[in-house]
Length: 270
Ligand code: NAD
View (cartoon, helix red, strand yellow):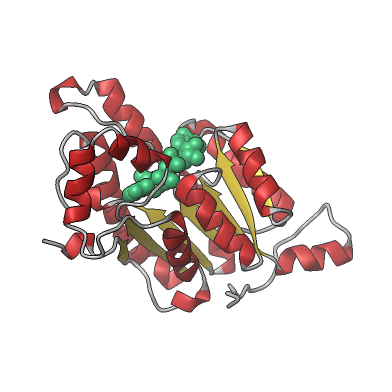
């Protein structure tokens, strides 16, 4: 199945020939943060398979390079540390200079930190909040500025079931993901009248580096997690990719402000 995000009138575009201009303006353009690995890479892969030009942003040049090798021409890597808030407007400008418009933003990049509550320093807490929340806010704001003139855009945030219920030793992570869900709802009420939809995915236990490391180090935790997951298994990154493709494109054109659990039933499990 091919998904389309229909676009209104093109913006100005300086550098290309007339033919190039036409093809560039007709492309659907997405940014996927943390697109070099795990869930972000799977989302980028689904987008590329559906003919979406996908800018993947991450810190690790080597991972980005490998992702580009895997995904091909429609994948455009940009190396950036999103916790450097001052670099964000330049990043967005770079995408606009190259493609003229942005249709989709997936805020997937995130970090976790597992520590006893009393061991978490102010610096630890701020580091997680800076990457998982403040950078998401700052990047979304800059991207939305470019979407407003087109009256069209789709933002997909990635939260976690840590926003739904308490998980010990991940205080800053839980705070950041809960805030993402609140921000999704608030933004949806403000921006949906202007043609910009904002939705959120709450992944359950998805087999990536992040969870595999945590689970391999703690079998009891793994059994507990899967024990309360009605489907009884971990998901794979492609499951989140499918949900992101749905929420990012016109297949979900009448959906905004939702948090979609993709978790094998974990959030309703006993
Ligand atoms: P991952 O560690 O494989 O991927 C995270 C990506 O974000 C990496 O590519 C990393 O380089 C990038 N990133 C982190 N900080 C960055 C920064 N400052 N600037 C630019 N890029 C940065 O982890 P994942 O499991 O694929 O997680 C992806 C998202 O899904 C995260 O937001 C995570 O919280 C969420 N999530 C994952 C699971 C799971 O089970 N894997 C469950 C719930 C939520």
